[in-house]
Figure: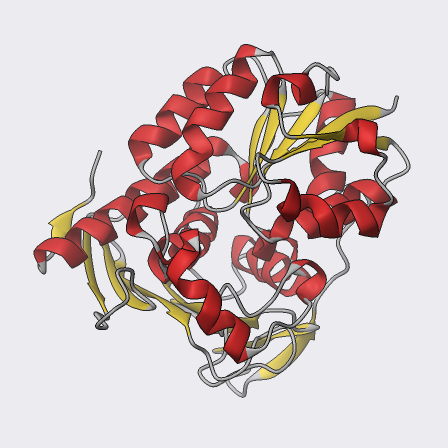
Length: 354
């Protein structure tokens, strides 16, 4: 079958990347795009030759095209309200990360989508090295997983558009005062932007185990109301894990890996694994072979190679969304993010929020 797809809101630059996946998928048809601001859609209209009759500034008119799946790329604070509106139309929903502005909003989204498919996309879930690391951990190659260390980010969310098109530093500074990324009420800041990657994929690596306590600190810079750097420590029954987010890395990891490297380090009872973003291998050490050695990242299988392909494959086969895109896995990740944000505000360790 051919899946009818719409793109809802262009607040997040990843909409352009996701529409490219739709454009290239043999079983997908883009039947509409929507944003209240026509200017935000211009680049996508040009890139994918979208006809005028499929471009909407009216939400209800866009959904009247009867899509099978809506891709949502709004500001984080608007995820819940848009998902509730889409759920009322009976439409399956694909939400670009992060999940929501809070666990309360995430639960509203899950409730609104009962009986329909809800998927939360974390682009790092499609990095072959990170998937290979999961397989090695599940196979017991480093014994029991004890610690997950995560460091990730980029130069900043305004430095690139869809398809990683570069934006000049002068343009970035000019956009900051009016950008939702830098507004607390809209769900901006590096913590909400990137910590969910670590907490959600970390939950996946930990097979669903929840931490007991969370401690977080963030930077505070005059004139900027959101954080650009956060460090979070999670206390599990099995030990401590650390997750760090950064807007302001020296280079973007998809071009040149900065130092510290972006990605994960896993510490087990019998070994360690380093998995860098976008790398073609992981680096492992074990008791039998303590010298760090590379293991090639395995190519992702058909139907599991990218976010859109995966969700459409699940819809076609009637299969459940699993892994980091599973709303229940993402919900625990969101609870950890909420706890970290609270810890940063009160400047002390907090118990994991319900």
